[in-house]
Amino acid sequence: MTLSRRTLIGTSLGVAAVAATEALTATPAGATPTATPADPAPGESLSVRTVDGLTLSATAYGDPSHPEILFVHGLGQSGLCWHRQVEHLASRFRLVTFDMRGHGASSVPDSPDAYADGARWAADIRSVRETAGLHRPTLVGWSFGALAVGHYLKHYGARDLNGVALTGPVTKLSPDLLQPRGIEVGGKLASPDLSVRIEGIQETLDATFAKPLTHSDYRRMLVVNAMSPRALQLGYGLVGGEGVDEAFGKPSRLFVTYGAKDAITRPEMSRRVLGLNPRARLSVYADSGHAPFYDASARFNRELARFASA
Image 1 (cartoon, one colour):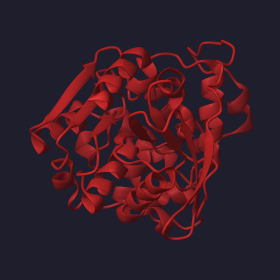
Image 2 (spheres, rainbow, N blue to C red):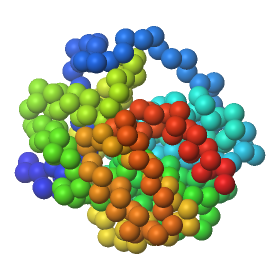
Image 3 (cartoon, one colour):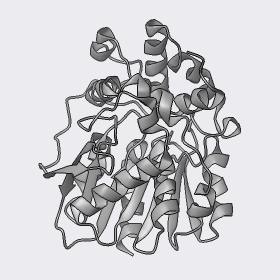
Image 4 (cartoon, rainbow, N blue to C red):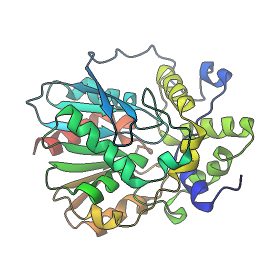
């Protein structure tokens, strides 16, 4: 199969869907070999039906009367990646996390076409919101999740949202907005050679964070990555961007967080949002990588809490 340039670009932003058994049991370089942190109190499990007949796994936490936050994770991950937010914000907010199509415990289509349409990603977010009964949530999108949020804004608008928060966002699938390391691992993740893809999966995960992951978090993220199909990697890079820039201009409240040590996307990937929406605000994290919500979770939680409470 000949991969398109857009597919290679898209794949470089995500994590490949295959991992070796030995990679799951090894401690990564620089990882912190600590015990597994206590998981947050169990939330309410939700089964979400999509417009095209898939089932998405979602979880709701906190009092339904509290301000609402809906989290959209990045490619190759799952709703579990937000555990540092759930642990610290569930007592004050109604939080909803979910596994996007092709991820975690959600349905896993085996055709790239199931992942190639931005309207489907947008409709999935809408379905989760409706099933969870969220009235005026703050939407939070990480990495590719931010692009999915952009498609949501394109198709459903922002009038009934409290605000939009993007963290380490992918706002456009374009090589000039990627870091060299992000482009470099893209070829490995798209390789037909399993051993090369395994190498790429570890390099990409290592590149995502500026601070060492706990050993338990590293293993969990690798396992989740391994659950995603190759069709996802081939399909999502075909997601178009027509109308998304205009959609980012719709929210009356838009907050962007970017890690200055992001090895996946260039600063322009986040800064361009300020030109698309004059009401947008950017917060730069000097010591964070592609995942500010993890690398600097205490600061991120404070800023998100203030934003979502407004």
